[in-house]
Image (cartoon, rainbow, N blue to C red; front, side, top):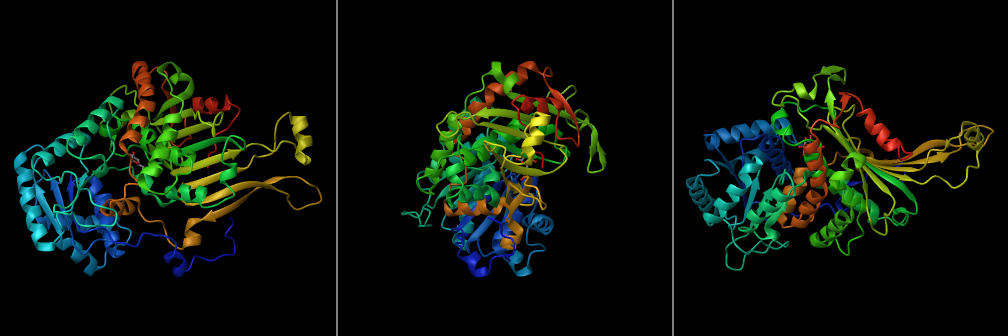
Length: 535
Ligand code: BG6
């Protein structure tokens, strides 16, 4: 797997590499919550990057929908500034930007007031006549979550959702010219199992499941998709991907920032809701799933949900043994002193909210029985890093010089093989192996075989939202979360959240900002005779 000595792929190799080259189908994208951060930081920059790459449909428009009064012109100016700051292709080429900007419109209305939806309908009709988007719609909910159900209900009541027709992956037109309607819903999708179910029920009163695209931006990351190609596009790893060879698996999502002004939101969420229930369980399902029969949306999601269902439930009574939760106190992060979480703006006094969570999960199926999966995520850790580490079993015999040391020191000194999938940053894959160092004696030192995304492909991976917006415009929901997936994930974490809420600050550990988490988390894994794989 080493690509040492090999240059970046040629354009021809990249062109034949299966990157989607088809532009999205003609449509109007209506963004609810268009004044918010997500629209500025992610959505418009992604649309602009798609436009640069020739992947936006020719007949395309965006309608921003939000409370704040502003003209189309003001909306365009704001979005231009956002794209200049955040898009992968920045500054945008003037001809590309001008074209996108001509299709940007704005409706100022509250999410509850039916009059706003009447105005939206009039504008959509006008855009259809002008640019012929074929009455196809992508509705994007980029609002606070309490607005999701009211918006869906009002869209239905205003007749803005084509009932059954959700389009076809080949982009065919609706048989009777009605166009298709799809809805993208941001996280958080509920705050526990009951609220997620209620939200699904509200959505299903208006949209069919095939029209619903629940987004988890981790699935749009190139390196996350690479988990499946790496596993199922090579023949040498999959035979070793099971309990016979794997000792345990670690998933780490570390962030080197505190809550950065999002204290008000974060204090109602915490690490479990913000990262584990969605991004981390999605990563786990890709790492642990069985090969799907095809790469079609439902075949892939059937396998993912099977893994989630096979995770052994953690009843509230075991939450204390199988999980750790902690909160950061002040500390030094990248040379800068940062305040304790509890002192952040918007955070409640004596807050019990966890900024760090670690879990020990077991998957009760044939492949993984007895192999622990350790999940760990935290804010204010020393490094921004997302990694999956597959740690293999130790060799059965110690034949080398280390054996003597081991006998004296009464411990193992050989580092077991470790496969690391580096999701971000420094995207790549590495395999730790034992090799003989130079010299007359036969002994073993750890060395790394590695693939570095940037060196091999010669480009940085695209932003997750680019891929996900394009897939939705193409009617491909493989990288979106299905109803049963989201509910199964909530079913797993809800008892733990309830146990934590009942205990409040009892059992909450603390760690200084800039450290790898609380001592309790080290003891947690050491108790199983293992160590965290800190990058
Ligand atoms: C979001 C969380 O879903 O993911 C944030 O709400 C977190 O708290 C972010 O910072 C991390 O995303 P990424 O792509 O930067 O790893």
